[in-house]
Image 1 (cartoon, rainbow, N blue to C red):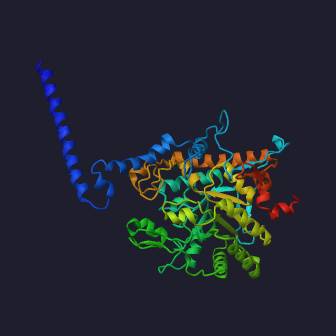
Image 2 (cartoon, rainbow, N blue to C red):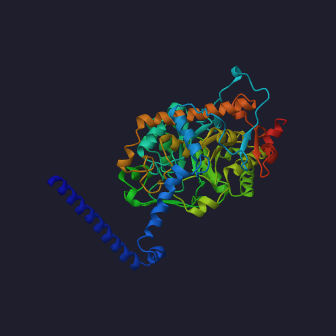
Image 3 (cartoon, rainbow, N blue to C red):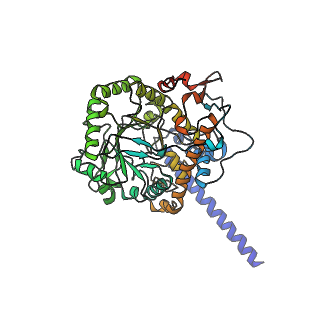
Length: 498
């Protein structure tokens, strides 16, 4: 009996303590909310007004896991992410009962199946495609699907290691991003594309100018196959960036060519490039110094600008042309960018790619300048569409992040990425086990290639690079689909007598 009474007394005291503490906390919040002036809701509705911020924060979580349908989320929906997850796991990507995709959405690509597709034994694999055949060290790229630029610093050490190992296994290239070449890019022995950003990280002298000696040092790595001059990226065309000095450790400083603690500032453009002639001079200079193919990465803003570029190339001579052009769509991603630029500036890859392909072909540069498509292309249908539209290669960053385990937590810019991909916090990085993740990277890349080959076979061609715009129909606002070669007549298709 005594024991029971003691327990009841304890519970009563605990209850009163809890209620008293909550009441005292509410009083503190009441005083603080009534005193502050920056939040009108909390000032007019003290204490309970705080729940608005809490629910707004939790809303993102609940929408992703409970309320959003498989095809509703942005920037990537659950169906897209789950396909990458299954591909990385090596699981079957077959589904039952019918598609969940709404094929009446304007812009949806639908592939036109052939009445008499090739027999199974007529199936062919894509052959390597050469970039920069006139250079001393041309690049014979094995895969049409590759890894887009992600800088060490923007993504973590284990993420770069897993990408390097996975890229080697799958036979795809890995773009360094503008953060320079780290030892971790080289660990796997994969083909590497060295990206030169506006700050020249990794190939700059003490004053931030392009260093020929450092270019030679980078080119001396046998696995560094090409150099890409970054003019703009999809999420923030015309905008540079900054790596705060607090994040410039001894390792980062050595890789990027900075002093420890020095802010890493990327200007909004290359200061020595004021026009297309200047750009061609820079391309030729880097190619002469390195002996390797050199291309550019940009975002398309208008047809006239790209037309002028090809005109200048032909006036100067095709030997001055870039060996490849990477077209990033205005919808492309990054860890942090101003919303107006991310949402409103730059053509979508769906419009820009066929436009640039047509202008390149009309200028007689199809065999001279390879086109690389980038910008939210993560699933087989995306890659097949890009090849049909005129791309020679497709690169993806977000797709490979999903293969590493990205859950689209939208924490890329906060150093709190829960999967260890975009953080330098050891607590989170330990969740990214390189020995497991590189296999998922390779499996995803191989699955993309296999599924794009399946689409190609179904439309009547024996390998993906033979896809043409006539093989794709685009859904219009009246619900009907129209062949893409009618919407974007192709010089290539006309040349083939189609």
